[in-house]
Length: 174
Image 1 (cartoon, one colour):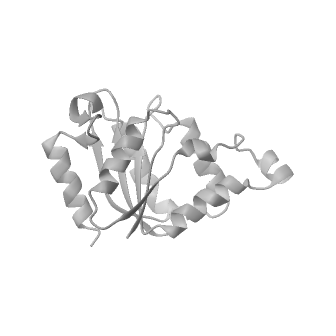
Image 2 (spheres, rainbow, N blue to C red):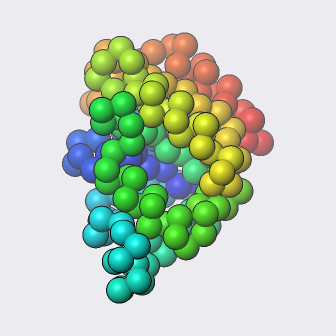
C-alpha cells in the first residue's frame, strides 16, 4: 500500500507533519512518502495569474503524488480557526487541475495543535468539504495539546485513547 502523508503547515518543525508521519508508520507493510508542502510553494492563486501563466508545474506534481498513492494522510494545522495559507494556496491551484483533488482515494484526516482544541475547527471544515473534492474519508481524529501527548524524541504518540482510535481508523483500510 502506498501512503502519501503530509502536514498542512509550512513550518520546518511542523507538529502536524510529525503526526501525519507517525500515523502512516502505524500501517503495516506500507510504502510511505512523507512530503513537505514547502516543496510546492507557488504564487498566490488568482484567475489572472492562471490566465497569464497557466497552472504551475508544482500543482501538477502535487496532484500526481496524490494519484500515485492508495491512501492519503493529512494532518491539518489551524491558523486563526482555518486552513494555513500555504495549504490553501496549494489546494486552490491543484483544484484548478481537477476539482476531484483527492481522486477518490482513501483519506485519513488528522489535526493537532499545542493547545487543548487540537485544531478541531479546521478539521471539521476539511471533513465537511471532503466529498466535494472526491476524498473517500476513512476517518478523522484530533490530538489536543501536542506537546503533552507526543514524544518528539521518539516520534510517538503517548495519548493511549488517541492511539487506539487511530488504529481503529487504520483497520478500516484493509
